[in-house]
Every structure is written in C-alpha cells, then in structure tokens.
Length: 559
Image 1 (cartoon, rainbow, N blue to C red):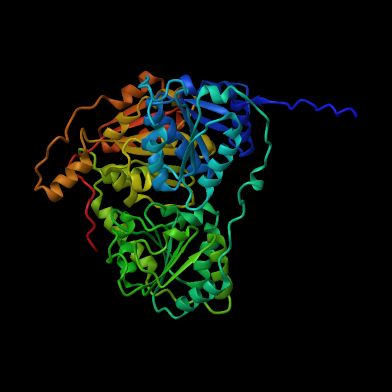
Image 2 (cartoon, rainbow, N blue to C red):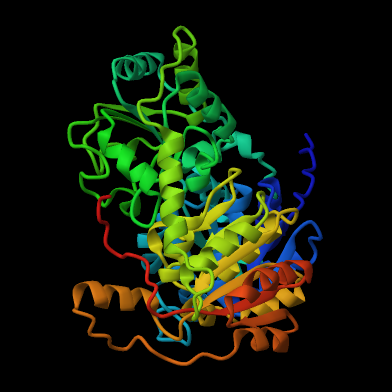
C-alpha cells in the first residue's frame, strides 16, 4: 500500500513570523535603532510597507516615543534595539512604562549562543536586567518559540494592570525557518474587559446614597475605556462633585460645572479644599499616586469611606484601607451606578463648585505677573494654556516648570494631557510628544520641560525634522536645575549646590537642526512666539528665559 505523499510545509524566517505576528496585533509603527542582533528583524520590517519604522538618534528616545504612541493611541507600541548598550539605553523609558502602566513591547537582540558566557563584546545576562522593570521578560531560545513569545508578550502587556514586556532573540534564531502560525489575537487573549459584580454595585450605591458629602475621584482608567462622557452624565445625574487624580486631570475635564480639578501638590486648591471634607470617596478607574495623595491622610479625611474601583484587583487597598473594593471595567462600574442613580433624584452639591473654582482662578491670577522681567514661570504656564487649542495635547516633563504647568492646565477634552507618571524621568517629554504626534497627527501637540530636560534628548529634534513630526517644544530656561533649587531652598536652608550651568540658545539650535526656533526674553513676545511655532508646520522650539526664583512648591501644604 502506497503511503500518501505529504505536501511540504511552507516556512518563513523567524523574523518574518515575528513581524507577521505584530501585524495581527495592529502594529503600524516601530521605533528604534538597528544593530548587529536585531538586523534580521529590521530586514523583515523593510519588506513590510504596513509598518512605519522611525529611526531615532538614541534608544532612550525610541522607547519614549513608543511610550507616547501607546499612551495616545491606547494600544501597545513597539521599540527595538540591539544587544548590550542598545538594550541598556532603553531601560529608563521601559521603567517609565512599568510605573505608568503603559503596554510597551521591547524587541531586542542578544548575542549569539557561541558568544555567550565568554566575556564577549556587548554580552550580558539581559533577562535578569529587564525583569524588575517589565511584567514579563523572555529570551527566545528557538525559532519555533518566536510566534508564541510575541503572543504572550501582548497578552501579558494588556492584562491589567497593563505594562511593558520584553522579548529578545539573536540573529541565528530569527534567520531560521519556521512554519507560520496565523493565530488571531482573540484566540490567545481576552479582548472584552470583565464587568463589575452587581452585588458590589449595590453595595457601592448604598454607601453613596447614605453619604452627606460624596466625592467622585477619577483616574486614567476612565479614559482608557472611552468612558469620560458617561462619567460626566453620571456626575450630572447625581449632582456629586468631581476631582481628578493629578496624573490624569483630563479624565474628567476641569471645565465641567461639577469639576473641582486635579488633587494634590501643584494641583487645584479648589479640589484640595473640598476633598478633606468628603465623607465618601468614590474612586473610579483609579491608581492612587503620591502627588495626588501624598500617601497620607490630609487630602482625604481618615474618617472618609473609600470606594475604590479599578480594573486591577491588586491595586485595591495599597495606599488607603477601603470600605469597598470593586473590580471590573470602568464603563460597567459607571453604567451600574448610573442605573441605580436613575431611581432617585439628583442631590444638590454639598460644595459650591463654581465658587471654589472662581476662588482658585483668582489665586492663579494673583500669582501671575504678566509684565514681570525676567519672565515668570507662572506666566509661561498660563500662556501655554491660552495658546494651545482646546483639543491640543500637552506633554509635561518632570521638573519645576512642569509643576507650574500642572497648576495652570485646564482640560477641555479627555486624552489631552500626558506626564511621565510615577517615574518622573527628566528629558522624556520631547520624544514622548513625538510619539503622541505620530499617534494623533490631527491634534496640535506641545511639550514643556526645563532646560536640563531639553538637553537630555535634543538629538531627537533631528528625528522630528527628518520624519516631519511637528511638535512645539517650550523650554523653561532658568540656566539650571529649578526643581533642585526648590528642594534645597525648602530642606537645606537655601544652600544651593550643583544646580547652575549655562545653556545654548535653544531657539538658534533648533534652526541648525532645520526646525523652527525662537528665543524669548520679554513676556510680551511669548504668546506670538508660540503661535508662530505652531503656524510654522515644523518641529519647533520656543526657548523662554525665566526667573530662577519663581519656584513651584515641592512640599504639599494643605490649603
């Protein structure tokens, strides 16, 4: 009896299989720099017109661009680097993604097997290095594991709490043949978030209904699920005032009639004065961060009952003991409360929100001196908000300038504010803003940082010019480290040390790169300079010389 002839199995390279797996996940941008051991991956990308590769000038810039892209698009983003120093250069941004719950996938090279454990050039044990700053890190040992590794990288990155994952392979793995595995994402990970338990929703509503001074506190989870409009309707239907966590002031636009604004240090005193009086805190889509809460009672009353909703069960009760923890999607939690609220009448707000906001606006106005010379940081922050369109996106760097910007930023729409969350890495704002602009090309994008931050990734201005990524960069230039001046002033008796230096003219430097550049020393010139930067249609820097003495607080002092 003749044995049926088997048809040969079509094979592709491991690198081709990797790229095809990315395509199934909807990846259309990859950021990075080529090197010896990721060239096979790059070669496959070369034959993939669906993916735009953004060549950067430093791996940190590439990873921060991926961070910004993922945040703005609310999808995973991919960065690639070679082995050794290529990998170590991405870790600052990967760690930022870990602290900020951003699904960033790093795909890196590793030395070939014959080179390992022999003290070869650029050889290191990379996986233990990446484990503390990722949710999962894996070195692909064989071509047949490539596609499975990509599937797991996305599955783990998108499981709440979201975060970065890392996979790596050497060229010998990526160049070998494998059989394609065209598995759709829905076949290896859940694509529909779980809903909240009705019994817990009943318990939450019972606490709210019995409260005298309830307060909604909104986090980024509400934005991630596009539930901001539903949250506004819930506030309207209940009459309950709303505060936002500081890292996501746009999760509940501060222009809403019931919005008290963001909480915490360098935030809105309208929120900080009301929140300690609340007897029930309903935190929705919330991760309690240190700037919003100081990790101590004061922003919230110790006697307040906290209802903590989050999509990540492990986040409940970390900072404050809760009266009720609820897990599930933000959309289902808001919908569940709205259904229960519909059976009663809206209450009269226990705080005069309009008056509280008016008082805060008056304080901001009093602190700002538009004609002061040198230019005050408060005036720069005010002007940024004035010039940036309502749908424009603001990216804020760590540092003292960013603290001023937070105080003056009124949000009109969701997904219009980004910062580097709990990592507070100076220098990330320019590449993050570039990633944001690539993800949202229809939106004006402005980033703000101090002069130290400007120098950290200034090379990416060439990337912005080459790739036509038109972001406007406003530099708070005080010729030194303003944030450290503020700390030394607060804690070390004003004994300043190692905080002063000299800068180039960043506006002139921008022109050398082929970007638009302006150098501003007079307050009356600032608004028009920012307007011209946007009108140029090019990457632009507005270098603003500011007063060294107008420092934002670095210690929270209750109002």
